[in-house]
Structures are given as structure tokens and as C-alpha cells.
Length: 119
Length: 108
Image (cartoon, rainbow over all chains, first blue to last red; front, side):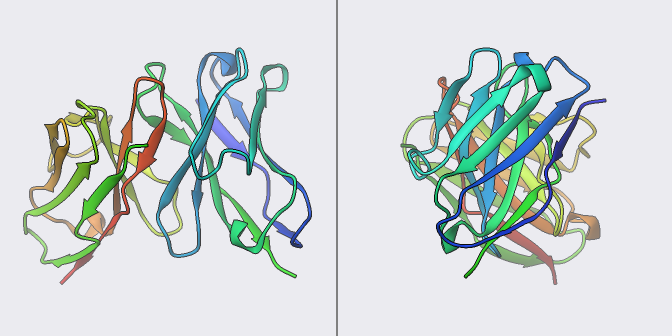
């Protein structure tokens, strides 16, 4: 059974760094793109970017390039989303999700990680 | 970057009604268009992929059509369990993607 298990909720202060994780199981992790989707409180879904664990190839959405780093380590079947300096506007639910083998849609989703950034 | 304009942003309909949501792309995206359903407190799930293909286990009252820049998503007979927000999503051959703004569906 394919599963994506995300790390727990975080409460951070502006300016702090953060790295949240998404651990995959039940499939060959290195062979499927994994992506991150942001959902700000009461708002819609935003595509942040994807990473291919097999060679660390990454694609970013224009609003997120330079603001977050997406990475993955196939040896521990884990993908990460990280910030070097959080802002209050980063407060959101973050979902990881796995693309199909064809790369055309997100087939499996994590449970979400709530990030709250507040002074 | 491809922009997706989804409408309406919300709608209210009766059980049994036919519901239609549209999504317009800022440029030709062929049939690289998916539709997701998100219920409160849950992660999204795909209902339709590649514009018109029904996802695994998805009821047949859901359908999608379109190509190029104009796409529609239809619920043929709205059920109480269909209360959710629906999103279109486009992707390109480099796997870059974006979502539409969402449509919140409520029961009248």
C-alpha cells in the first residue's frame, strides 16, 4: 500500500528556518516525482514544485522559486520542503503528493503539515 | 506561466441537480487538465485526469470534457456527499503545473 506520511505541525517565529518531511512507503520511491502543495487558511491549492528522487531534478512554481527548497533522499525514502527564513505569510497547510508514473496527476497524498509562523 | 481561470467560485444547487464548473487556460494545454475534489479537513483527491478520464473508484456521475483552453467538469446528479471544493489543475510536458482558484459547491 502506497503511503506518504508527513511530519507534525510546527509553530515558528518569523526569520526562523524550517524543514518539513514526507516519507514514502509501499512503492519504489526513487522512480516517482513527489510534489508539494500549499493551502493558506481558507484559500485554494497552490502548486509549489516537484522533485524526482532518482536524480534530484526539481521544478518550482514561479511564486516559490527562490523562497523554498525542495529535496529528496531515496536512501531514506523521504522528501523535504525547507525555508531559510520564514515569514508570517508562510502560515499554511502543506501537502506532499506523489505523481503517477506518467507524471500527469497527483495520485497519492500525505495527510498535510500545518505550519504556523507567528511572533 | 499558464494561468487557470475557474468559475464560478461558488455555487449552490439542490440534490439531483446537474452542476457544471468551467476552467479556462491562458494558452493551449491540449488535454493536460485534471479535476480534484477536496472535502473540509481532507487532502484533495483526483476525480478526472487528462481532461476526461475518470479516476479509479470515482462515481460515474462525475465527468470532464474539453481540450485546448476550455474545459468543463460536470456532476450529473448532485449528491449530499459531493459537498466539497473542486479544483482544476493544468500541467505541461515539463511537469510544471498550476491550479485553478477552486469552486465551492454547497447544497441549496
